[in-house]
Length: 409
Image (tube, rainbow, N blue to C red; front, side, top):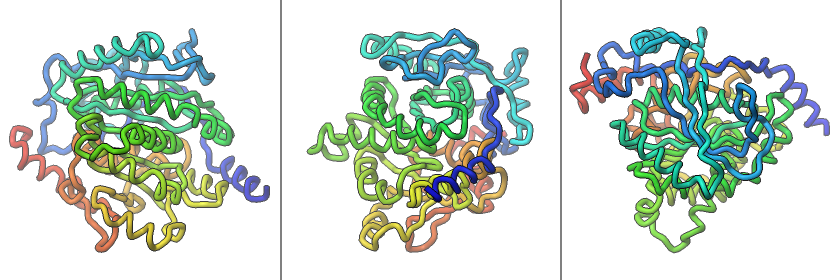
């Protein structure tokens, strides 16, 4: 009880006020590189400030501007949100100029202008898949991104944030799984455990997305969305226990599985979740930070370290050896990366979108299953740990210029 009271006091001190102004993530640093011209590769039809973000949600529909509430619905509803990037009067040129000037200190507004619900599963499955395939056919990006959020976020907030990432990716198709969570800090104590009931729905979504024409499906979970995704992948792997990795790749086409600032027990992840994720994916990426105060709070409550802020002494020597034996498992320590590590909320917990250098690596990893050394990360010899060096953006830019000379400005 004493540990819980101390943790709650710490959370009261650390938590900032929530907001109803939904913001674009700051532009990843590589997209600001003056030697590169990504706009040239963008088809004219996609040069727009409005784009689709697909969703599956267990939130209840509401007539309010937020579209879906923080209450649970009966079943899973599928649909697409039309997201506006920037102010209502912006055109493509204004958005591109804003991208180059964006900083975490001056967030840019975005909005969900409308939603189109296709219906609930399974009746809406075909319409959902067809809409995603139509979006993929419009773009040069054959990747589908599937994202599971953490707690204390609103439906429109998630849609706008991932709409900005879709824009940075050159579109493709982005799908969010949205589960109900409140807007107060204490919702953590109830919403995250309660969300475990949605694990079968996330598993089903992964199987449904394999019906699309996406060449690759990148999967990412944040904060207490991570245990939900990890358990869903366990269930997906268990569907065909005798299948080989090649057979699983052919069936599910999962590229990278990415866990960012993950609020999942480190020992549980190592013993139960790592192998199913590795079986299904081409790579498994774990981003972590030792200055993530939200996960410091979570560790205090749980009495054990979290995957996103690990204490390696929680693992046995045998567990460490087993994890280190597979180079496709990457632990990426972002603790010392300069720049912002949050964009509102708790200190150190939002680095994957707030920090323009870290978000560059996240962006590359959502698009391509590139080994860490090939995307300019540096390894701590003899460990699974990779770090983002000071010259990271310059190194990535040079590699892109060599691989894609047409990007030269």
